[in-house]
Length: 276
Ligand SMILES: Nc1ncnc2c1ncn2[C@@H]1O[C@H](COP(=O)(O)OP(=O)(O)OP(=O)(O)O)[C@@H](O)[C@H]1O
Ligand SMILES: [Mg+2]
Image 1 (cartoon, rainbow, N blue to C red):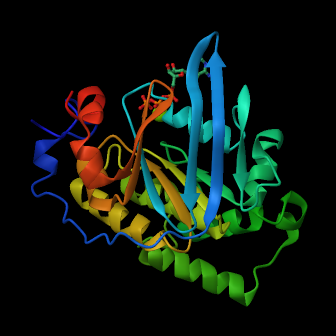
Image 2: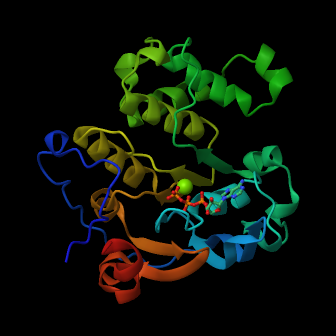
């Protein structure tokens, strides 16, 4: 029985000559919690997109969120970032005092939740370096950003980020001229400039070449620890290459959660998703 979804997004055989190298993923001791999602429910015209979803994230963990189309993965991210207001339930960051579902999208971003959408949203007419600078200044608010000059520490941080995302050599290149994968990494870099505690990444490798996917896997793994990361992805080869704990959503509910090896063997998960 195949463990790949029947129609993975990036099923381009020519583009993917070799499987992604499996990296050793130790089952690390659990860290203090950073994010609590509690009993979250959302309906759209009576249809339950999320149905009593509860999950917690350890500080610094890299969590994969998988499940069939329409399972509610993006809706969950929308609720965490304030784009969608849930009908009931709560989301807490850092402490269980401040329910994010009552705050604006802007305030939630300020508190430390960064989100990367599927399509890169870089400023195409600006250079790679300028994009990172704008992202970093954006954290200061519009007024300060207009007049802000970067400190030595901020410049060093940007240099570090460019190195991390593999675009140091392209710092002066117009972002619009970058390859698809490079744009995705730049956007991750722009999020990093805002130093988020939690980074939500929706389908990062859609449309990427095999080599770009490998780099993205390494990038996300290198960010875990410093940041808490949630990755939504349909490409199971990619998920296997980075996964530690995996949460499976199905019809708005958490169907299963655990180590990737166990999830792959879970008969319900195989039935509704992996064995399609
Ligand atoms: N703004 C909206 N209005 C109405 N229905 C919506 C809205 N957003 C999501 N839905 C519905 O809620 C369900 C969950 O959608 P969601 O986008 O969260 O799924 P997903 O798990 O991200 O799927 P995919 O893997 O295809 O991206 C779907 O049936 C979708 O049509
Ligand atoms: Mg989605």
